[in-house]
Image (cartoon, rainbow, N blue to C red; front, side, top):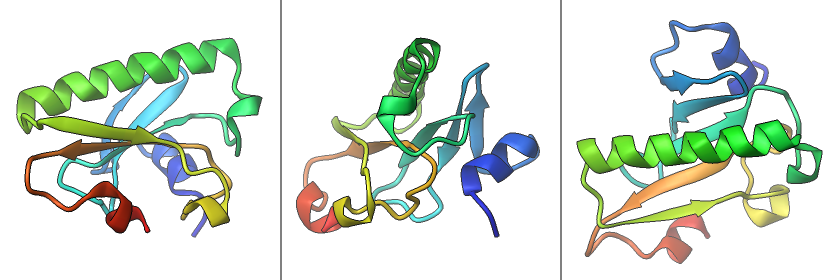
Length: 117
């Protein structure tokens, strides 16, 4: 029960936490589109990019850079899909806490549009 991102930020023993920074947390997606699918969210419980502070924006992109480097080293994907789903109609499964998807991609895997659709 409750927000998965807020639960994860309170529990450092969470098996899905990849890393945590001063402003963000990076988790493995429990229902991934692809192997290595990661989620980066601000620690603060907010629903939209318009509510991010400059510090949170910078930290999220530094976390994106770090997560991408980890995926490159461990899984060696050939590409990535990056994105936010804002609102239920846009495909967001968790609408109350903003999060960025990082989906590793390889030649021959399923096209991103049918997977998210």
